[in-house]
Image (cartoon, rainbow over all chains, first blue to last red; front, side):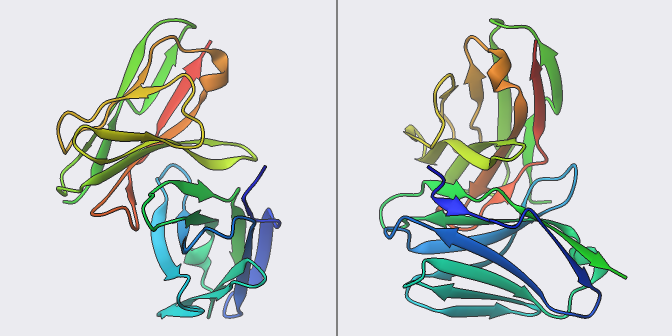
Length: 113
Length: 111
């Protein structure tokens, strides 16, 4: 049972446009969500996180939106740059008392110059 | 430089031959964790540790052991490796269980 799902394996976007990456979860006990970016031959790098008490968090070009009723979160990258081309993973945790993380399967973003 | 260091980076071995993948962090982080990455399955957590001598199972702990005798080190032990443990492994650390800093990975092939 995949508790965290990224249903789009890949996404292509033109440079300068918005990239929207989606993530759905099934476990209502999750209360902390993160996005990581991964380049080939490197470990994942933390991008941005959001707690369930918020519905939006921004950091520069990256914004994460959380819709608790729909159990859905999304990562917006504006404007997209060629250097953003990577695999993006969302992750979830029931952070109050546990630090066990469930990751999605990843979405490969390609930003076209 | 703040880093998580894994060794070895690559290993080809045979079924049943015990192996250890070491992980060390120089950031004085309390939390450390191991993941495996497989095609189509994303990252799956194997074990994590909130502090010295405290370890907990992640999503896929079967066939693995860990120990946390010192804060900086968190080795992953495969007592009797099998081909289904062929994978790309990542170690990660975090100050308190939040956003994690990952190592560059260890590619294990078990024949």
